[in-house]
Image 1 (cartoon, rainbow, N blue to C red):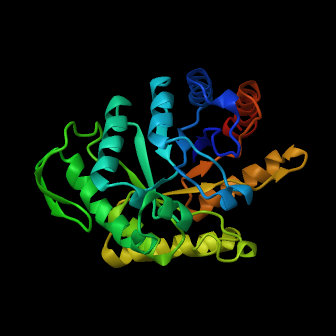
Image 2 (cartoon, one colour):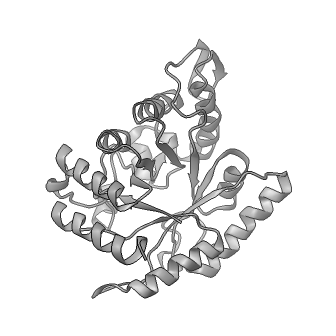
Length: 301
């Protein structure tokens, strides 16, 4: 099992103590020293106020924030969890990803999603109803742009007649993980990506997240089995990484280590290979201490 730490920016309002070069470096270094495989940052460039007031969160630009984390470490992978692909022209996204991958020495995992917050699409001038078409179009363009060879492609809102993007990424193939619980998302993963990023989606939330419900291990197991069945149908033999938040065992008195470890073992049995760890803190010192405790109780068990 590989463990991922979310950098402490998914808050509203953000804690300014975390918004410094020194804080990002210290947390990333602590995660690397502890044995975490990656750190992650999400994306919300201009979230809707009502969503923020209802429990949403702010975010730094993931490529900028992860660049600071990569600069402070040597082995730690950096994960966009996740970047909303339709928000950007695909060549701009390809350039940001290739630049981060090149400067980090090949440590980027590009977590991608179609997005669900319509008001954010509206603020960015992107047609919400086009998001699936834009997503699929971009996946094809990203691989072409990363080849550092001439690109000729006409998209919905762009045309490259004879264009080339240098430099290529450090990795011969940047891993793309696709987020979302839907059947369409799972099919995209099997056909076009290296990993799947489902999310917990309790039925109590109704349709707020605009995707299939995952309300426990049975739901997740069923969808992973469907993912495997689809891979068999098309003859795919290459493994698919599955990334999921490990959220069990968290209570008012802190983390129930035994319950949490049991949960991770159950996730691994289902087929999850990467977990997002529930490690946080209200200060840099507190977060570093929490990383140390989690490492002793879980990673080093």
